[in-house]
Every structure is written in C-alpha cells, then in structure tokens.
Image 1 (cartoon, rainbow, N blue to C red):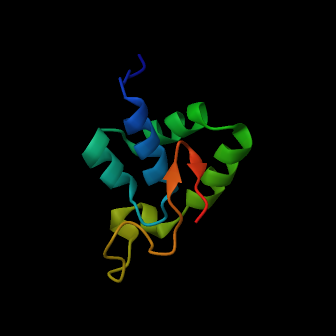
Image 2: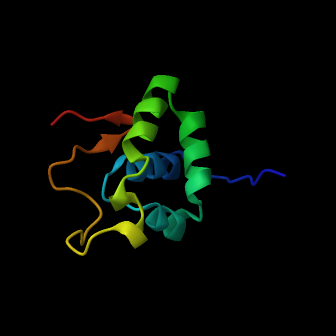
Amino acid sequence: MKKQFKLSERDLDRIIEMAWEDRTPFDAIKDQFGLSEQEVITLMRREMKRSSFNLWRARVQGRKTKHRKTRGEEVDRFKCTRQRNISNNKVSKR
C-alpha cells in the first residue's frame, strides 16, 4: 500500500527546492516533512518533467552532501551561498 501525503503547494515547492540544494541532506527533508529519501525521489519523479528529473537524479546520486553520514565536517550549513533560489519549481534568475 502506498503512503499518501497531503502537502500544500507551498510545502511541495519547498521540498523540491530542498531536494535541488546540494547541501540539504535528505535527512533534513525527512525531519521537516516526514518524507524518506525514496519518497522524495518518487515525488520528484511525479512533479518534474522527465528530463529535469533525470538531471536531478544524476546530480544527487552518490553526492556526499545529500547524506549526513557521508558529509565532511567542513559542510556546516544546508545551502551554498552561490546557489540560486528556486521558486515555483523553476530556477529563478538573479
């Protein structure tokens, strides 16, 4: 049986934003929204265009900063200061 989540549009956008951020671990998404890594992957697959999902998946697969246990000590915050903001599932221009 699939787990059903009732997420607001705002929460959905925030989860997608957090998933795209290099320094935000999946554990932070789980702590804030209760979604496991696999559930985030499923959500991203459902909410994004196939090409965007494939880019995201290739980007996060094996990335050490997306998992707290494999992060280095030098990573002490979630979001890189040079990373663009994401809103409404689109990368915003600076």
